[in-house]
Image (tube, rainbow, N blue to C red; front, side):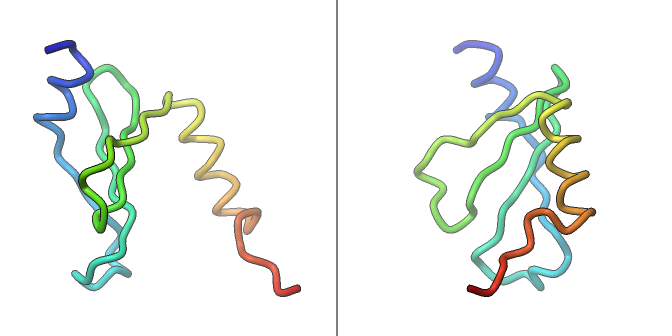
Length: 73
């Protein structure tokens, strides 16, 4: 088992409190090597998507600025 697989097997996943404990949430885990893993808790059969801390920081910044808010056509 490689280090990423080991990190994912031992990951502590969390999700936003807005989920209210219901399904359909994006979960994240901070890995020991500094990367962030993301997964859809409704489809745990798919492998998590893993990004660098820089990519995560850019995404969070964009969310906070409203850059990912869906636009009405």
